[in-house]
Image (cartoon, rainbow, N blue to C red; front, side):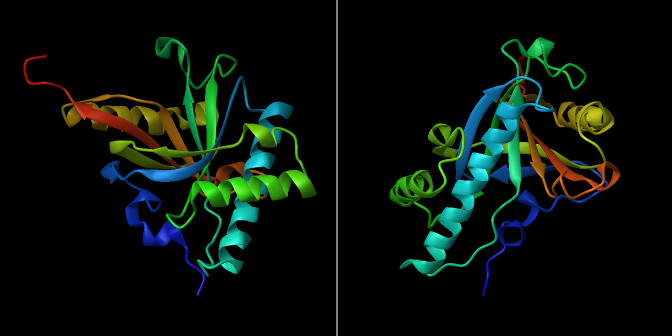
Length: 209
């Protein structure tokens, strides 16, 4: 049986469509790669995503055919987005953005499996930016998230504003990086049918603040 972690991990990857909610995100392993600048029509960004997927599919088949005997769906692409000065981070101007693209990996995937897969992909395909792919454990903790339907970028502004208002209503403040989970591919999906979970790590505002 093929495991679909978007279902087994519950609301982490299955956000209700109407209202924001709070989630506790446990530490999870990811394939990651970093870059900067507007992702649109950006060859460096396309190369980064291509390298991530080359690794994700190699690891998938290594784990399926290996002693783990685990068949799982490759997880959706995710992105952390920020700026050196977060006061300048906005959805309209992406030229100053920094980003980290990611694909979540099951717990059965280890550093040694990653390193073996890296050598195999390098030997067989060696896509651009492959050597920049890392295996990282990320711990976001308490987060608020919201479902967004439609195009990316400035079209997300109403959803982001609603999410941030919800965070403040909870007596919390934003910490960490703007996080997006892309539930379908912009290469195969009309912009108006794109589905995204927008996530934001938070922390409670101290009572004496």
